[in-house]
Image (cartoon, rainbow, N blue to C red; front, side):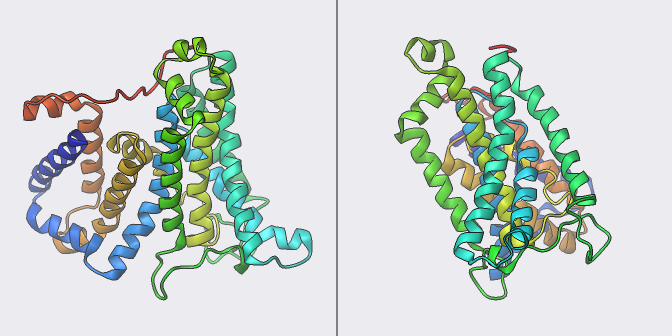
Length: 354
């Protein structure tokens, strides 16, 4: 974990140079960033709110990486999970003709939303396993389909007939489908606790179960896995489906615990930030949680930083990009700090048909 830590520190230093270049004071900028992220109970709450979808989406990408798959489709899987959760949240009581207790309605909304993400991810997984179609290409194309289909639904059949503004959005979900906040007056909700629990369960799955061993073996060497009697095709589909399930949960939690409806474009960037989070966390669940909190803190503190120093919030995106650069090209960090590290090699993807 030393390389990611040094990558973050290096990105902060280079980011400071960028801040100076745009006429700002990096010291005051980073003070504002820390204040906006952790300086009060409300700041901590908002950092956790930002980090929650990042944890789920980062775990989704990390799990796919463990299986030797590059899931760039988390954005679409997240959107499908969100729109399904919203549909179950507001329409199911009308379909049944009766109100549902929260103990039934919440698990249904969250579970079916996560299942929608899993099914959407299983499609490129099956194409990879049975036709050799590259998951990077297929998940990118599936993103376009999912986002445009979601746009159609939110502007058509699922559009709120009485919207609070002109944006495309669903009706609000029923009270029985809402995950409550933990503290009065703050947006910090149980979804963050659920994200931590799921991260622990993903750790158990990957490192303590037979299925996890099969996923890691297929990710490291599918030929050796096949020789050892592991069903490689089945494992690839399961890996992608589980990855999509986690991405779908990111969307469902945003609907059921935060926004209480699905709005077009609310999740833009989550799926792609998740790639950086998974890499920064070295595809380990604990690392993903820490990286997600870091990214959530930067996103939350950016507004305070801009207020104090008048530096554009886009500088945060520059710093995040630098972090990804230094983590992905870790030879740069090794060269700068003159040290060598040995660790598990992350298989991001394999060749076409591989």
